[in-house]
Image 1 (cartoon, rainbow, N blue to C red):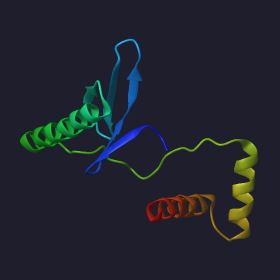
Image 2 (cartoon, rainbow, N blue to C red; image 1 turned 135 degrees about the vertical axis):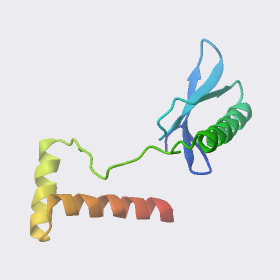
Image 3 (cartoon, rainbow, N blue to C red; image 1 turned 180 degrees about the horizontal axis):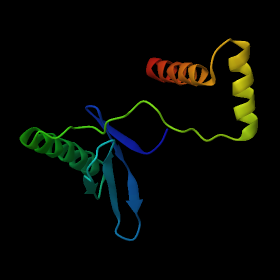
Length: 115
């Protein structure tokens, strides 16, 4: 698990500044920079939820798309040995490497969602 908050469909990063003695973060997966902070975990969570609500209101008022759009393709960098093994397994299963990776991601998401 990583240091993240979740509210509605939004994910917020969580960091701590020892110098300022404050927790802070930003809403991830959006095209804008929306930050939040609090000096306790409870205040951080409340600040995150308020930031999400404010952002939703802004998007509604301006007609802005809420989340980043994804085009459905991305580069994945792995070490050459892992690349070779994945390619070999894909061939043995009669699949393209793209189909093999898509199914691996779907399986991981399904497993995480069930747990």
